[in-house]
Length: 289
Image 1 (cartoon, rainbow, N blue to C red):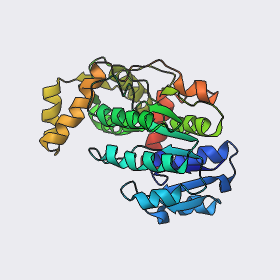
Image 2 (image 1 turned 30 degrees about the vertical axis):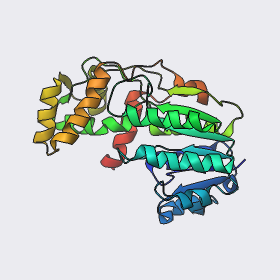
Image 3 (image 1 turned 180 degrees about the vertical axis):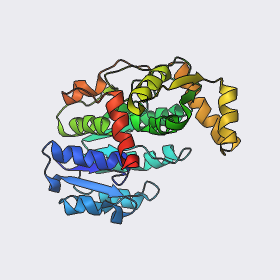
Image 4 (image 1 turned 120 degrees about the horizontal axis):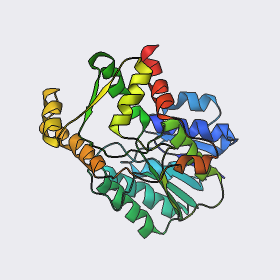
């Protein structure tokens, strides 16, 4: 088996390569792809083959797939451009006769109404239409996304959002990467859609409690309306479009778009997922170092 990890120079991609190696994959069986291969020097030093792979350049995708039978398509980061970029990878995988395509999607991607869902829904539909044997792993929110909230709370004593009492069932990037590695390495899983979640369901009020424990000071949760949230984001320097996009995600969380059953990660990896407090501590550690 030869596994191609796309976007391997990114935060998630690097962790997937690490997880594959930790789980016993031979370095020579892993291909790490990125737009800039100089950013893959650490993987190359460990014996992993590195290749140029740019979602906007189909020829690089075709070349990267040579000799590959399993692919992890990590979703692109360019909002509004993801569907055609992902389509290039899916088309190339079909042409190459890939035996397993794993795609990192978003929670409740085909049923939920929030700004990030449409591109993931469209990509999942393209995968089904292609006929390429596939597995969908829908990553819940990264704990690392909330490190900034906790860091700011060290001075303000407040975490604020317009998520209301919306539930998040997140995990660390490392946990989600490990779950993806299991799906890539193990036989089976084809046709499955996994809602990858942590072991805890929590709200922003719970985030305030976790921040209090980490910081050693009381932190309160201040709920905002969507309008208040947009105004605060614009005051912080975001343009109206981006402020509306960010607040729209929080509005989706308030409606329950991230609420999925707990334990998705641990069921695949066979170990407990990282707790919210431990995950946030780890995310904050580099800033404190």
